[in-house]
Image (cartoon, rainbow, N blue to C red; front, side, top):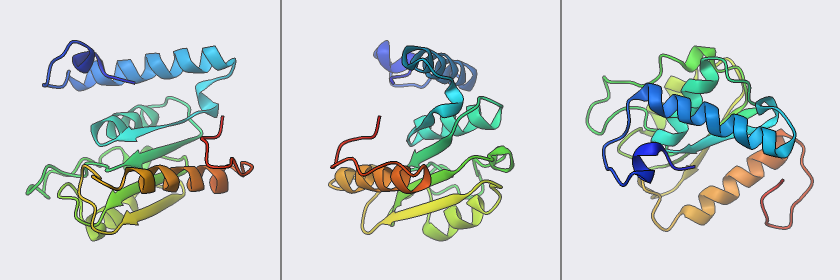
Length: 163
């Protein structure tokens, strides 16, 4: 999904409350379209999108799990500004897919921070990838598909996304 600021053509993100409300609304709408509840969905996204999804799940939106790609643990060069206060409320399976050259979180920083998550946590590290995952998008998608299949015991999908 695109956040409202993106749909409006703005570069500056909306306030967190607007971003979080957008995730809640879109997840609920998608679940209704599928004839299910948000508790059966794996939510997530890349960078800020994943962070907002994790915050909404920590606040109580039911979800089956979180797939977080290039999680922005802190602003580049500002490791003291961690974005993890909600991690102790994450009780669902969580996947973190990150590059080994991501300026928003080193491998040690992210693994240390995610130890606060009580739910099961998996990490996939893409060697040489930065925060934008240039030339590593297919590897990131494959990692998410493998995790979905193994975590939720889905049948092999022949390379397509499970439905």
